[in-house]
Amino acid sequence: MAAAADGLGSIAIDTTQLNMSVTDPTAWATAMNNLGMVPVGLAGQQLVTDSICVSGFDPSLSMMTGITPINPMIPGMGLVPPPPPTDVPVVKEIIHCKSCTLFPPNPNLPPPSTRERPPGCKTVFVGGLPENATEEIIQEVFEQCGDITAIRKSKKNFCHIRFAEEFMVDKAIYLSGYRMRLGSSTDKKDSGRLHVDFAQARDDFYEWECKQRMLAREERHRRKMEEDRLRPPSPPAIMHYSEHEAALLAEKLKDDSKFSEAITVLLTWIERGEVNRRSANQFYSMVQSANSHVRRLMNEKAAHEQEMEQAKESFKNALTGILTQFEQIVAVFNASTRQKAWDHFSKAQRKNIDIWRKHSEELRNAHSEQLMGIRREEEMEMSDDDSGDNPSKKLRVDESALAAQAYALKEENDSLRWQLDAYRNEVELLKQEKGQLFRTEESLTKDQQLQFLQQTMQGMQQQLLSIQEELNNKKSELEQAKEEQTHTQAVLKVLQEQLKSAKELAEINGHDESQANEVNVLTVALVNQDREKNSEKRSQGLKSEKEALLIGIISTFLHVHPFGANIEYLWSYMQQLDSRDS
Image (cartoon, rainbow, N blue to C red; front, side, top):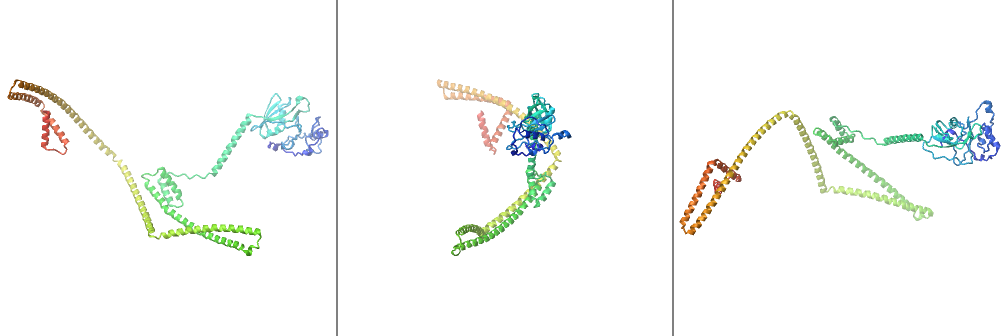
């Protein structure tokens, strides 16, 4: 509604001049004459005051000179005021157009109701149009409110009008309640009471959304620009490692003004893993340069500590001066409270002096306690310095000096060791580079060695096969010997049984012992003959086998006795084996 004030102008309304009777014909005629119209026979209240009437206006002047009547809707004339505040009643006036006339509603009636305004509304609903009203007449009436982009008229005496801007809708709403009459006709089809209200259109809402999105983008851009302006600058990008950059960084590390920037770059390179065998020496020199700044930092710390001591001394002196002044002020208050001067002060003055004295004493006591605390700290420091003259303190100082020297020697030793490791790494790299040239010869010698090893492996496999065949033969011979042994054992058992039976028969028949001995001799002879026959059979076919068996037994015996044995012990062992076999 505030936008309508720019196009429609303003008008001052005096409520004291609105007391004219509605039935006063002279007032109505004066109003119509001032607007250049012939008065019509309609009863109503005065719509405009005398303060805005054109003085000395002649209605026939328009007919004689061809001047058109005054149109209150023309921009700049200011005859159609904007909606006034709520505490001022609305006063509307007659509006003349070429094809129609708009008469204002009764001001005593309540204002016409309107729906809630949609966001971005540019379209109005106009109802109550005369039946004979055309689009040209409607455009003639409402184009005074602003540029019209579209008019959609219905057959049922209403239409929708879309304006170019939103503030033009407020001007159109102002015409709600006017009675519209076409020409000077009194026919009902040529008149109608207008009802103008907000209309909801998809195009308006879409444009409003687009505008809101554009404003949101602008706001985001503005905020981003503000954040970028207030954001602290980002640190500079750290370059990649190279020998040239390392040399420049080493020079920067030696400069006190560029040390903080250079140490950041060095830390980043080490964290990135740029340290290798080739660059170890360069990085060690840079680390050593960084270590050289420790002494400078300690000197700076000592200088700041000295400044702090000087500041403490100046503070103590100033505090002493303040305390002396407090003492003087308290002395003044104490002198004022004595009998000679105290009696001459009034009661209110005595009260103020007493309050001031107490406050000054409190401040003096607080400052004196602070000064005493500073002095106690100094005495404690002095006592520490005096205790430093003791021999135990001197021993501690000597021990700390020795520890510092040992630490320095240790650092030098570590640095030398690191340099030695770096030189070793460089030598190994050179050896590897040179060793690539001799790899071909080494590969040839390795191939020959592999061939020799393969040939020896084949020979060993053949020997293993031959040994396995011999082992199988020996196993078969051992089985045959076991079978012969079982056979002889069976023969011995049979002979033993015959011997027992013979002994029993001899005892029964009462023969002499000589006969029994003869029988035993005969049996033993038979057994010996059988053994000899078997041994002859074995010796005929197994001479070589026995020799191999004897060699195997001797080798196992010597394996069990790694430190050696006597020949007699070996012979007795062989006899025991022979007796077991027999």
